[in-house]
Length: 291
Image (tube, rainbow, N blue to C red; front, side, top):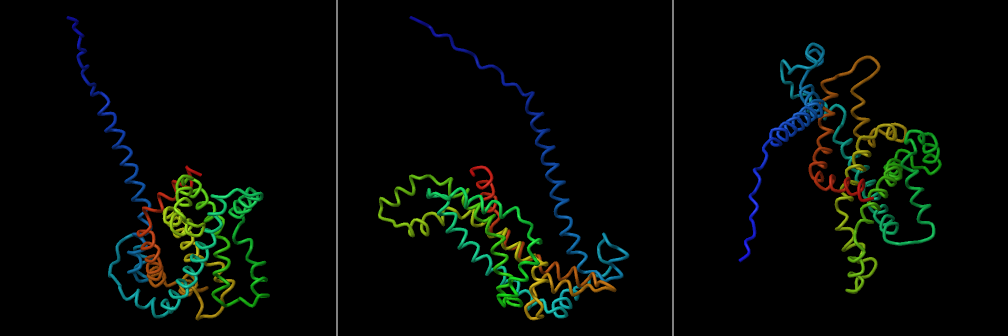
């Protein structure tokens, strides 16, 4: 009878556990410090929005001596923030819809088909990401004037869409390339047409990349000041950044009203980001790694 020797398990070393816990503690400490430093400007903005000018100068980094909530109502009424909110929403959502529609179609063709000028077109979009936006203000102003688009929503929607497209196409194309060809072939075998493949399969699967494009495009259009300043002169069409700028003039700045208006303007961007934050991280990872 043959007896097979049984190897005794070696005692597990516990020397690595304290080191791993120490490393984990250091990492979490650094992340906590970074999070505090990142959130502090928003915290300072909110508490400063309740201060008067005198309180702001005497206690710039402290809590308000008297919490003046009237700053928000005064800011909303004095600078017509309601109208500015509506204008900013119209311009931001309009440019976002155009960007998503054009970028989704272009990225689908660039990612799933092979044709002669594919590399040149992709290079064209990549080069578009390198163009300084503000260097185009003068030629765009002349173009908008010749097309009679100044003081209209289209004067902002079209430039915002044009400058958002290169990044949108780059992110969406990188994500669509990562989708296996087997899914596309199975859809064709089931009788799905090209348009059905795009709308019912590719678009739902590219939701993380679409969410990333949504955040980037919306934030750019919502926060832009220079294009709105140059292309819009009518008071009824001014966007939110222009309305906030009215609180400062050449002689003095009402910091309480200005910071209250800025706090109100930040709320929509926070809501949009909280809705899409998980998909944004997935889309950015796919665009950066898989592409």
